[in-house]
Amino acid sequence: MPDSTPIPAGLHHLPTHGGRAVPIATARHTDGQPVFGRLDGPRLQACLAGRLCGICGTSLTNQPTVVVLARPIDVRYGVVAEPGAHPACAAYTRTACPMIAGHLATYRANPATRRRCQQPDCFCQTDDRQPGTDRRAGHGAHRWLEIRLDTRQYHTRAVARRAEDIGVLLTAQLMAAARRVRSISPPHITNDHDPALPILHTSLQAAIRMEMLTAAPASRAVQAQAARTVKQLTADQGDLLLCGGPSTSGRFVALARAAARAAYQPGGVTVLGMHLCRQAHPGCPNRDSPL
Image 1 (cartoon, rainbow, N blue to C red):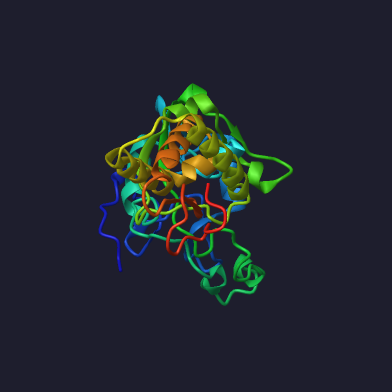
Image 2 (tube, rainbow, N blue to C red; image 1 turned 90 degrees about the vertical axis):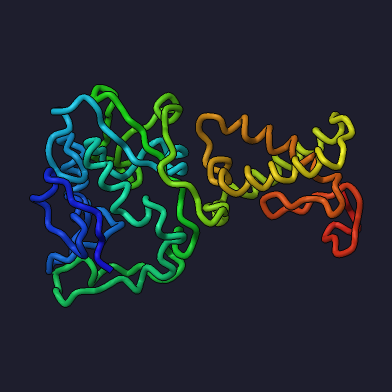
């Protein structure tokens, strides 16, 4: 379905596909058709090294502000693969990109089904990614954040030993100023395939046990409110707990406290796949060893 978002005058020089302007850093088949969601290596490096907008391809030094669109998981690695953009270009991307705009709930289930053109020298002919090898395949879409930087704060790495180290460099101070531009809908933990999840489980369970030892008895109303807090923290903010960054410790403590109280309610509570209850109950998976 063609995109109906008006293309700003500053992007009229770009090719279009499906009514959408094709960002300068987007990968293209040899026949010219874009692969939205995939970056072109040489174009990416040119944008990073030359401080060029990843959308329109012109210099970022001609305006005082650079906008970087990032996911919470980028915080863990301290680098965002997508180049920065002019504020107007970023505003267009926020509405035209179906992933950032929130129109897609999950990533493509099978990356291998991407279109392959008929040009023998195109990258798609040797793109050997198979189902399951793309860590995002089929998983929930990430939350997206917008970081507005003074041009002097915009630092990039165009060359690195590992491809994942190439991009815009982040700091905790910069992430603290991030603004959410895409929530998670439907609510889910976007990184349920993340290797950090077992570590979070272990540390969270220990923190909850400590809270249970020190927390004062709570009324049923408080327990019910705590259960709602658990749901909110593990759904809309689950990826932030996994990926780290500013305010993560506060979210972790709030979740442990809420879960400790919610575990006392009839039926207990489930937190990040862990069932917690103070007493065994019908259908309880912890029948032999409640908290």
